[in-house]
Image (tube, rainbow, N blue to C red; front, side, top):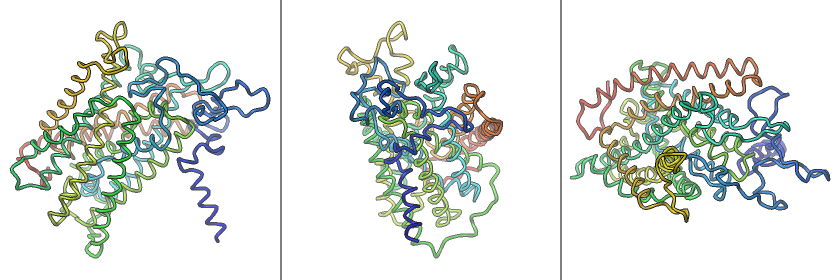
Length: 503
């Protein structure tokens, strides 16, 4: 029996991020989903110096090879719209913190609200969407690679936009995806500001400061984001954000377990509220959107052979946390479940402590999408002639110009102004997830993969990815209509709105 459990532990340990680079993972790295005879990214190797029988090396693992001098990155290598530089690589754990920050994030506080309208179907969707998004993330990164003349997998594209240009055309393809990414990222930033205001007004409903004023105060702490230049700094902020996330999970789940004798089992059913479930499905999709970051994160990893393992574990962990959290929280509060679950906590002191931790987490979550959005805008508009009409944001010494810092500060202020204009967290989250989330996470990765890799795919894989596209389109259209309808209805209700439940 002990030997049996030891084998299970060794199997699990071999798939943890820290062990992803071992031989087993390298041999199976970056499988595109093709048949057994297809080429894996693991065949993308450096063959220089292998005449003496030395084992060939996986491209992207040079930083871990102690006997190989580090290769100097060429100008612009791995420099993408996400702002990653060849000189500021991240390991698999830092990449995992960023992905976890993106797919766990603050949006877990609205997942019990999804169970309110979707029952067990909402819990199932939290696991199913995690699987789909993990798959589409892998095939999106697979689209960055092509076989070269020597039969090796070579990274010929650097970003989501580059893939779109190859599939939709140079003129409009990149612009369409670029706009969708910027909308998604800025709306994510807006949601964090909205959530800060919602949490603070939920903690101090009788205070002299209203919800919009709390948003303005929260924005003051976000202004330093304008000075972020390195992905490693963002990764550390994501790490502390994840720590705050775990603390919140422990506190709320502990409270739910204490209330186990009063759990409302009969309230969780297989019935669906037809008018609001599409909104909640949009919330679920939006909570798993990380495809925007993946090409740049993979390109900036010290050892890219560990990307798939990192992506698997981050999504498995997210599915377990989200499904369990949403289900247990709804069992505890039943039909009284609110848009932000912490507003259901009974005592004011307890609620204030939890909400303040969540506000800190929201402030730590903001830099990742903001950093990506700022670099997307700079890449599209501020590279200098002849690439763009506007000059570069960087001076000769590599530092941001004063006017560039001012523009970044203005971007923070714009997210605050839009948050004040649309202060309905869960409904806005569902609208964004139904609009850009389904396109970026479901439709485009599958379409691009089939267009670029169709000859290497089996019939079952084509059918599966076609079905994902159909699901994404249907959920997107229905979700946009339902979310827009709920948002219009919510505007007729005055703020603050902790007790709102749009009809």
